Image (tube, rainbow, N blue to C red):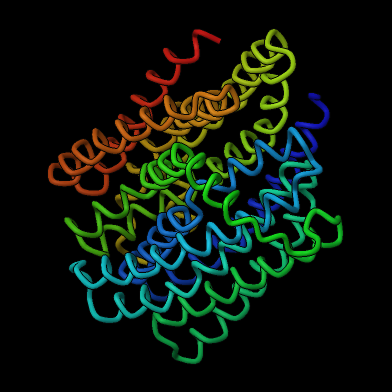
Length: 406
């Protein structure tokens, strides 16, 4: 199993890493040519999409991955029932995003950018369901191909259109198109592997999936909020320019967080099967992977702390990014507690304790909102970093206590 997890972590890391690297190249282009305010707008776009895409999926991808990993023959049934269920939830979430953007205190061009981005939600529904099936059978390489093509197309198109004088709405347009291209690629892969076959519309089963996914939905939404609550709080309280400075440091941490998510996504199907069939092996695997992760991340956190000023000066040449070095030094240590929290949350879900995982994440969001708000009011972008570190530390502590019973 260790070899399979390593292979799948590599594939998922490659898929996410390619996307992050190419997206980071776009961010550097925006930062060095347009400055912190434009970077702040782009980070707001990504934050809204991250949160509302997860809301639209209603937690179904994680449920589908877990259940199909236990019985591959049910993939087609789960896909079409999930599509019917997510189609309904996506329509509701699209309307909700339109309404939320309308009441946010953002400039007009930022609001129009976000309204255009609403079109990405139904496309992400297709991507998430097909991707869940590929994860369930541990065919992660197809995600690499989709992410590579999508991210490359987005980078080239964005730089071309922005250099021709396009406004911030261009950022939303290329994001929608990129998600659509990725959705097409993973759906074709699922069809090729016969995970998706002739339509099987079972609306009773779709309703059952929605009921079963409630805890997964809550967990996924609050998980997304924990990852982007910092940007939302900063953008409302401190404005887009300060958000851009914070995002300059966060994008470097995001690379490591992406690797962490790739690792936990690769482990999740394997430990789900172990919990169902071999509890002692499940416990041993959980402790082993936790130790591996912490051993790998500790030198990364220390290195980023020491090199933060040099890295920021090297990457961000435009004036206004000086404070990003202090932000990076704090965020470097957030990756350790983030890993503990994310990994142990996946362990709780694999062990059919998704309700406990949901409760922890919900509590983190409530506490994090207060911590981030206080931190931003007191110290701006640096305070947001400290609030994020405290929020993930709380999550690591609570999930650690809950998994002692395994």
